[in-house]
Length: 164
Ligand code: COA
Image (cartoon, rainbow, N blue to C red):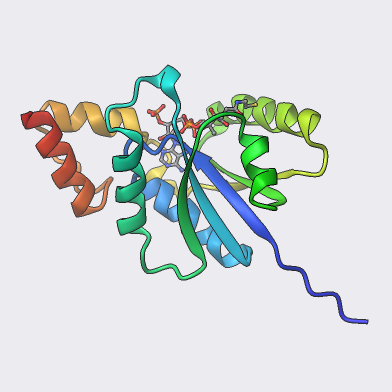
């Protein structure tokens, strides 16, 4: 008997803004799973620089070439969103050992709440291991060149936001 799996994975984050590091993780996850939902978290505690809809729209545009990838927003518990989407996997990117402790804590907490949801870690490409959204925002705010870290559309959005 042939068993056909149809797996939906969720890649959550604040994506404030989405970076080439995030795109790299999303690209590789999209090859591993049938469907990938990039879940842009409201993350009110982080007081995001870009509002939720803008973060979602930027991710949509930069990932528009990937046919099995869609972008949605969520607020509240991640595991509730995963269940509502009938997904079974959470994808997280690991950049360096320093990410490991926090990521394992998140994965364990999520598993404690929902034992059927598995977290899968994707190792970030070496050229992006030092990239983070806040570093990109800081460089852009100080007038630096962020073109090697973000899509041109995001670079423009950062410039516009900083000129406001
Ligand atoms: N490339 C580039 N940057 C990366 C990256 C990669 N591959 N992986 C992580 N980062 C960066 C992010 O941009 C972020 O940068 P910043 O802190 O400078 O903004 C930083 O690393 C931390 O990222 P992350 O751990 O993904 O935090 P997050 O805020 O983006 O996402 C959630 C965290 C949304 C997944 C988590 O808070 C959550 O699940 N929230 C929902 C509420 C919930 O369920 N809470 C209980 C969880 S147990």
